[in-house]
Image 1 (spheres, rainbow, N blue to C red):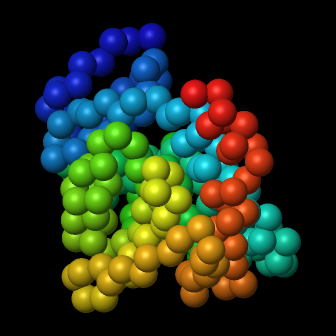
Image 2 (image 1 turned 60 degrees about the vertical axis):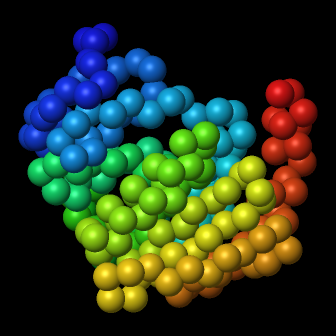
Length: 195
């Protein structure tokens, strides 16, 4: 494995040539290489659960209406290539996938909050809104909450959901997930019990 250093300045073209690296996820933010910490078991569980629930619905319909992916890079510009926890693409936008990266604007991105809350709540919110990502979900495992942000003009309009609400969106027709199934999942309780 090649060693890469956080803070290295580079373009998207240079970022694409990086070899696989150890130690978490790498993003290109404002032309600077940033290292994200590896996901916790709980973070991974929540991410996998959402991807599975979305794909169970979208692949049960023929033709398939779209697909969700975890940890694909997102090429937004020459200086910005974040790696959202989840990217959802409608069927007609699956052509945007090029290897391990989405080249263009996805229909939906999801970030699961970690200890660096400002990164997802402020920086990435502004980045995704500025790029024109139509829908952005922020999942907060610390407070069992999920915020749906829908683009209106150049700003997001928020819809706050809690453990007793159902997550539904026009972006994924037919998708309706009672959030109690996510936040109250027995497997999540087992993971949390091991802390």
